[in-house]
Each structure stands twice: as structure tokens, then as C-alpha cells.
Length: 358
Ligand code: F6P
Image (cartoon, rainbow, N blue to C red):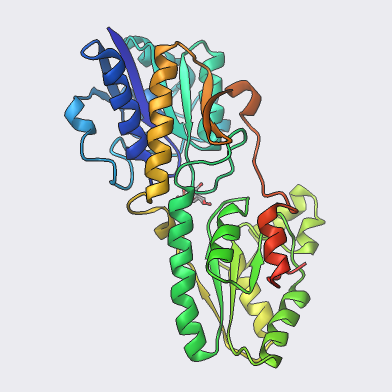
């Protein structure tokens, strides 16, 4: 009998259930009745505190289009994994003990960068793990794409489309804050797809005077409204020149709920149009996965089942050049995939006059 545990960890996103389904159906196809799948509750928390249950094949039916994660999730910071907490819980020891208690042959771990680092830690501790890259941020190194990203691009693009019509009616400047943590993939794609006039990314620090100039030029050319797609991690040229410590301190004293509000205030002092902010927030992670993600999750899930059958452990199932491939966790854990500033998408955007505020 094969025993496989599945957990989803970190921020949720579209496609988690589709990927879980892919793994489970793949395993049942490979092993028939000779496999038991354990659903571990709320990510690594369930593995630490022994909260899991034996799943039935029917648990994995009808979930392809379902948003969120049927297993639940939680954020368990990697940097605290080896720290004994105030209740004297040794998290790593507890995870290993529960893995043994379930008699697992392997653990399938669905998550982003932080999750991947802990997956690698478990590998170093001798557990068999397979990681599937999920996040709307698309910032996992070693895979061309993460699931959840395309669905979030659709949502963020829809927000920008809708803001466009009301911005046009009122002749306003709208700043749409797009998620993505420290990288700009989501903002770049949604910004281009939504026809934003200015796109601000963490990878390209902005000059507020240049942004204001673009907006004024548009008014002079008869365009009364403007749309800015701004990454939640965007930063100014002054901030980019700071040390990590100085930047952290400056952001702790930001005085605004987030960077887009500061940008809005600064711009309002420089332009005549009314400047407004729109923060779609977690809408971007919610709801059904788009068709692209359903296919991607099915491919990644089916490949994870194959790797488990082949005993190919300690890897992430990456999608590279259209193929699912095993990527050693030790090569990728802790690396961040940022947007290359000269990537084809940025080049095309610049060619059609989109400003990056630099
Ligand atoms: O990593 C996904 C993400 O949605 C980021 O884009 C965002 O910065 C973060 O998670 C928000 O996290 P939380 O849901 O914990 O507030």
C-alpha cells in the first residue's frame, strides 16, 4: 500500500483544488486501490499538530473549478520553522513524527516560495517530498509559470477594464494597486492587458516627476483620464538607493495604508485631474481558476503522481518550455524569480508608449 500526504500552504490561489485533483486522480490511476491519500489540514500547521484525514476518491470529484483549497491553508514562516515556540513545540520534529505516524511514502506540497523553502528543509531532514509551484505572484524560480497566476491576471485585468470606463466618464486618474508581493509579473501582464498608461513595478524604480509629466502630457493631448497599474511592491528611485535597513524603516513610517496612497497624494499635488485609488486586494486570488490554470494544474498534478510512482523525490514539478520537468529543490529553494527589465513584454509596452515611470 502506498501512502501519500497532500498539503496546501501559504496564501491561497485559484487552481489549488484542480492541482489536488490532478495528483489524486493520477495516483488512483497509477495504483488503483493500493494507495491511500491523507489530506493534511491547514498546511504545515496540520503536519505539525497531527491534523489530517484519510480521503476517499469521491473527495476529489467535482473540485476542478472550485476556488480556494479544500484542505485549508495557513502561513507558517520558514524562518520560524526551527524555532521552538512558546508552547515548547519543536515543529520540525513534530512534522517528522506525524509523517512517520501516517506511514507516508511521500508528501505532495503545494505552495509558493516560503512553502518551497520548508519543503526543502523536510527533504534535508530525510522526508520524501514533491513540490507543486502555486502563487498568483509567479515568482518561483525554476518554473516558467506558477498556477494561480493566469487566473489572477484575468481578475486584475477585469478590474482595470472596469476602472477604465468610470475613469473615462469622470476624467479621473485612477491608480489600481495590483498584488504580487516583491515582484511585478502580475502588474505587468494585467497592466498591458488592461491598457494602462503607466505601469510601476518593483523591478523598475519610479521617478514621481516623470510619472506626473506623462499624465500632464496626456491631458495636453486631449486625454482627460489616465490609468496606472501599480504593483504593491513598487518603489521610488530614492527608496531603491536605500540600504535594506533604511528601506524597512522608511516603509514602517510610510504614513499611508500602502504605497499607492502615497503615490496618489504626491501626484495630486502635481496634476489637475482628480486622482483616485482602487485596491482589488484578495479578489485577485479568489474564485474559479481560469481555463489555462485548470490545464496547468492537471498537468502538474498528473506529473506529481508520476514522480511519486517513479520515486523521484526532493523535486518541484516545474513547467519549462511547455514540458513538466523535475527541478531539484536544493537548486531553487530561496531564489526569487523577478521580472527581467528588458523582457519582451516590457519592450513591447515601451514601444507603444506605456511609461514605467523611469
Ligand atoms: O503571495 C500571494 C499574495 O497574494 C501576494 O501577492 C500578497 O502580497 C500576499 O499574498 C498577501 O498575503 P496575505 O493573504 O497573507 O495578506
